[in-house]
Image (tube, rainbow, N blue to C red; front, side, top):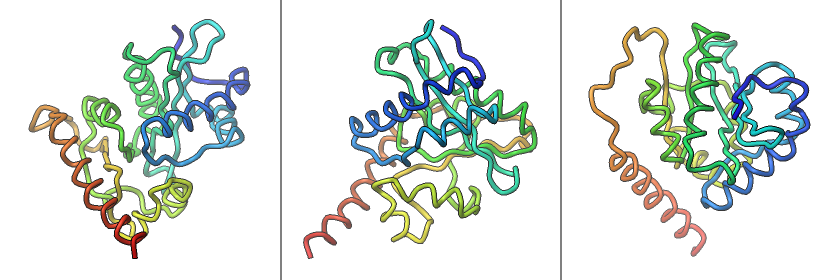
Length: 209
């Protein structure tokens, strides 16, 4: 298995990457911002993507986005092909793209928003901390990217302050990234369930009116 910085020869996988991301979101029943092959291609051409390959077969992908004039960096679009799930590949890809981000943008804060519990666990282990949306970038271009997510209405109804996603942040200014508490999946699961119960119930009431 190769996990490498993507280059022009990997543009051929852009369509498959987008399809895999879309299908994964449908299976989980969660919202996710849609990506186009053109957008993925741009990330690859700029050297801002990591791809995993088993021979010539696509296995996984993740890319880097920069916001606020390089003050913030997001590792987005983490996906593992169904044929390679359950092998810890997502963690390896995330670690690779995280290291690439730290090398390419050493002073940037690295953040992400996600509804995926496995991603939260990976981020936590890398040194991310759960934060409110107010601690993330205020670059409108980032939040505009959420418009293609089915839960965007929840974000707008809460004035951009919260959604089903959980915000997580790695701050390079913090010298030692040691958590006060060990990762507890029950805490994150409970948080996710509370959000879904609160926001989706409001959405149902709105539809019933």
